[in-house]
Length: 135
Image (cartoon, rainbow, N blue to C red):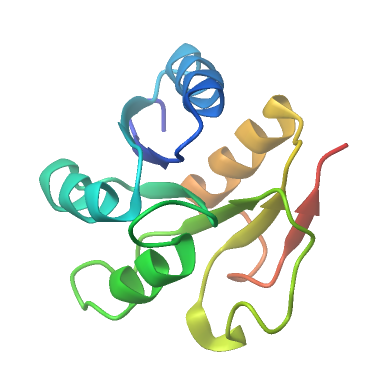
């Protein structure tokens, strides 16, 4: 699925670039957003097949963006991978939100690429609540 579209949402330019370069090298088409409001606009314009979504961002945080995406019938089937520098906080996200994975920073870019490929081909575990710690 080399031509799949991936939306990267992170306010850290270094992480944006790291993810963008690695995904493009794998043949993905990539767009980048720097905050939650821009993420929603980019989502509707770009129609990604997967979203890499940082938790802590300006304007709307990642959880607010995920709720809006998953609350919309046209958007809800797109897998979302949450990225966070914080270890998972059970109070921070509802179990029923339906994100595909929660990845803690720092992460191994190659393992993240494997996860992206699995989610896009449908070979990953059942949605969410899979937590990935990439040392």
